[in-house]
Length: 161
Image (cartoon, rainbow, N blue to C red; front, side, top):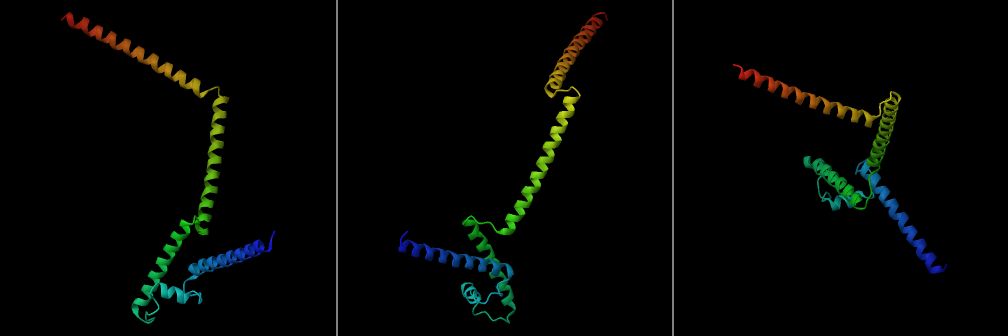
């Protein structure tokens, strides 16, 4: 490896570390409340037009809250654009995923148990379905015979009058 590569790579990693620290500071600042970080506060006031707002005016707090809300929304959109999910959302989704995995495992166990019960009673689901279909067909045929006999009886009985 040559000196230039090592210098470049070292500077690159230092810049990445500074950027990471800035992102962590920004996220912490956003979570704790915007008035808690002195270094970023003047920049925030300037960007959101709050630098000339009288702190004692009744609308000051309303404007500040609106700026915080807008910032949080835009920050979340920005992180989403980068493919980053806030930790709170990730933890919640991970918790839901684990819960669903447990439910699926329980349901699979129940299905396995029910299949064993059916097999133990000599009831194969396919055979039971086929037997049910045969029974329905037989009943349908017998019903048709009954209707024909009934119709025949009514016709015979109606001609004697």
